[in-house]
Image (tube, rainbow, N blue to C red; front, side):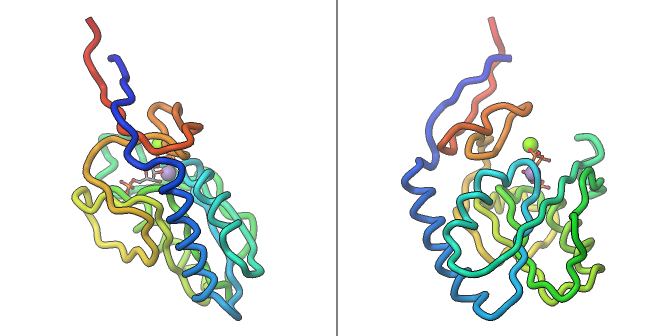
Length: 178
Ligand code: PRP
Ligand code: MN
Ligand code: MG
């Protein structure tokens, strides 16, 4: 299988500009709250690090790593926690930060799981949303960009763990080799 970076879908400037806007919205909405930003490893790392610097408020951070039980059962919505949060979240105003929402199964599980820990509130901020692929309802409170159903990599998003370091978001085409 040959991998070809077909085209840039979102360039660095577009991403930067949108993150400044999201940062302003979040800053406005979380005044006088106890904001805890939770990054979902690993895809969210790049977005997370830029987003927190666009928010002009005191805040704390934590990370959770999850994995679906194999690709064939992904649609079952069973998600396994590989690395849990370091601290309890009771009373916190949580903003879950994700790179992309696709079927919605990861975020659906995460929100349900985190709500059982008695936070004050839980909201979601997602850089990319592929609405066509949704299998379960998830309320996403802050969306960077809605995108078409194409395989994208870069800015934290991977294909077989590669391309996370691309500074832009690009469409990856997979082609049969000769
Ligand atoms: C990807 C992406 C989201 C999730 C979205 O993570 O980063 O977390 O899938 O898919 P869903 O809406 O269909 O659940 P992945 O499992 O590839 O792990 P990674 O973040 O470490 O790349
Ligand atoms: Mn992920
Ligand atoms: Mg991945």
